[in-house]
Structures are given as C-alpha cells and as structure tokens.
Length: 285
Image (cartoon, rainbow, N blue to C red; front, side, top):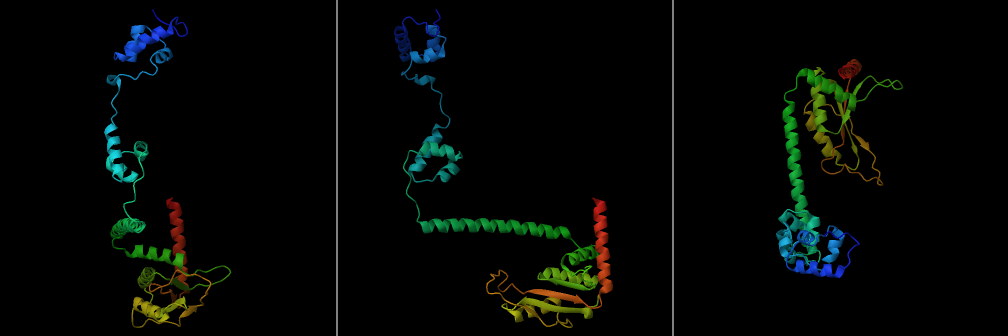
C-alpha cells in the first residue's frame, strides 16, 4: 500500500519500522520500497536522526589530500606551500585546515625580507635575460643595411629629431640634437652616405652646469672621432635647485648639437624625401 503525504494514520508506528530497517543497514531506497513511501520529505522524516549505514557512504576522493594538508599545517607549512605541494586550490586548503592554530613564523621579519628580496632579484635577473634575448634576436633580424635603407632611416630620424622650417620661422638649415650616442652615430653615417664633407660640420655640447662638463666634452669628442671635428663653445643650462633631475650620474653627458654649414639645399632634399615617404605610406595602406 502506498502512503501519500499527510495521510498516515499511524506515523509513529511507521517511523518505528523505518528506524528498525535503517539500523538493519538498509538504504533509503530500500526502505522506500519496503514501506511503499513515495514522498521524499516523508521518508526523510521517518529516518530523521538515524545515520546512514557505512556501506552507503560515497568515498571522498580528496580525503587523503585533506589528511595530508592537515599534517603539513601542523608542521608549520603556509597555505601557499601546501597548495604547491598538493596541487590543489588555496580555498580547499583553507577549508581543510582553518580550524588548526596558525603556525609560528619559521623565520624572523628580517629573514622574510631577505628571502623576498632574493626572490625579487632572481625574478628580475630572469626578466633581464629574457629582455636581452629579445633584443639580440631583433638585432640579428636587421641584417646589413642597404644604401637606400640607410637613406630612408636617416630621413625619418632627422624629421623626428632635427630642426624644421616653419612658416613663422624660415630656417632651411640642417641642425640635429640628441643625447643618444647611437642616434648620433647613425646620423653621421647618413651624412657620409650623402657625401656631406666633415669639414662642414660644427659640433656643440649642451649640458646642465651641475654636471661633469669636461668629461661630457671629452666623451662626445671621442665619439664623433678625433682629428678635424670642430667643437664650438659648450652651452650650459642653468641649474634650478627646486627641480629634481633624474638625468644625473656618470652616464649623463648632455646632448650633442650637429650643425651642417651651407645646408639649405640639403634641408630641402630631406623635407622632400620625407613627404615622399608620407605619400607612399598612405598609398600603401
């Protein structure tokens, strides 16, 4: 006979039978079939307070991980260390061991900072290696420049960093200023490509007065090549004590100004070549 919810004439008698069956080791499904109780809520009420038999319990695949996590926590391991060791989530580790007391620190604050700094140093060293590897690969990909490629590079370089003629200031002259020795080298190689005689070049150092002016002058003289290089008087920038400058130290050498005498025609060629690059770039897209 099936028992519908709310229609049990003797619930306590039925409960006694359900509890007895539960204690004999029957599962809920077996009790349901035995008593013909189809309502799940009623069935739960009939066996309330009676634990299920062991054979019905589903084994937990993470029980061994939980036991291992608790063991490691008692030995003083951190959540991160346990997570790494067991390959599980940090939230699971917290759930398993949060009732255990927090372990005492295994090292002093000074030792912790030293370990952190050592880890950061290793990370930065690894990043530096990756950075340098990328640069070396890019360098090798450039290969040998053709005369045309150097010409185009030089035009773009000048138009980015050189002095330009303006409607409000007619200055058709070649004047290039930069602090990067590599840029200076490329620009001088470009002038050689255009057969600009070095005797037409004038150099001048621009640097803050608080810097090592003599060392900077010597550096730039060596960089452009000894001999006939003509250097004009260095331009010193006034130092503002309220300004916190970052371009300081032995590597700060100011800027080098390169002026090409009688260069109006050369300037017009540069400007025309740049417009040619712009037009062709637009058509290419």
